[in-house]
Picture 1 (tube, rainbow, N blue to C red):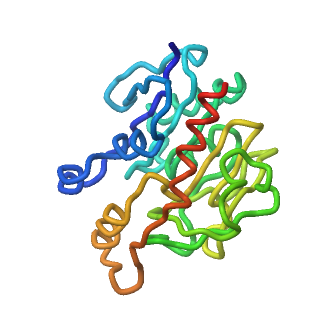
Picture 2 (cartoon, rainbow, N blue to C red):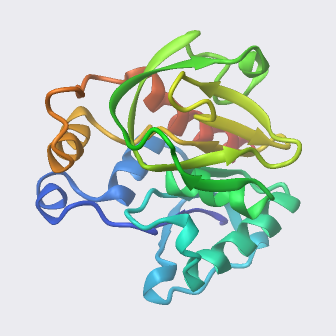
Length: 228
């Protein structure tokens, strides 16, 4: 059976991982119960990228690395993403994964001129998201977890903007009918976000609150993968 492949391209802080797990654990938990097997692939560690035709769907995690570093493993994964999107394999990129998907498809990624966006933030859906498989059932405005200093400065050609806010206008986009990028972290818990707020010394101007609605993006993506 084809698997949902989670590309693990980053690691959270060691002390946080010891308490609540790492990025891939949070993603797998967020996907929820579904009939497809899940495979973890870490291209940084030399894991071979699976042939796209053997993959039911793919999730690309966040990372403390930067897309603009153009690491060899990152550029190879960008090429893989181009092939997967062309083959209409469901793809979900989260934070770094969101930016890498945009880069792979012709968008532009760079440091945000406003600096870091961190904490639980308010995100607003666009009218174009009303019929989207991942966003249509979300409220017009919802809370989401954020922790990023780079962002998608220009969307890929043909991308549909799904959500944003005043700081980050490109919080979510879709290309075609089954490739999504989300700058926010649907897999983050308030505890995870609080750890990032503390790491960056932003306790005075950022909060870590529940974001249950944003978290449904992962389960909705798993449903897309299942139905295909």
